[in-house]
Image (tube, rainbow, N blue to C red; front, side, top):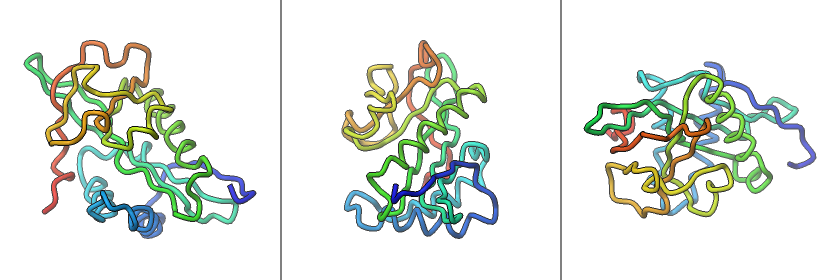
Length: 181
């Protein structure tokens, strides 16, 4: 990590501008991105799905924000009703700091905080080779589906507590903040 000590902490209002730039730069060169992830972060902060304690930054020893993760609430809807889970969206690390374990630090800390707060599971649309190391597997294995067309291996879910996804099945309902206006 560039020989640097990385600290993970919840975001504050003073961080929002710097976070927006981190998110924008992290997705700038990704062909599968629509390049609006930084706008999603802003919309989620203004929604009921926002969980301030689960929107974390990674900062270096100079106080520079080099990474960010946001977990927000989603519902899984089935004939049995709905259950609240979390969604990882987005996970961002500045290009010059990628492939140094910062994303993993953010995911693990966010999961630990979410579990402690009583959340039992998390879903995401992400890279099939990256997220399994954090306990993610195909959401379809749990009976969870996504409301859009995406490769099954990229639609993932993870238990944040043992058995945390038992008896949870249905379709993920994202908050309106995920919809582009």
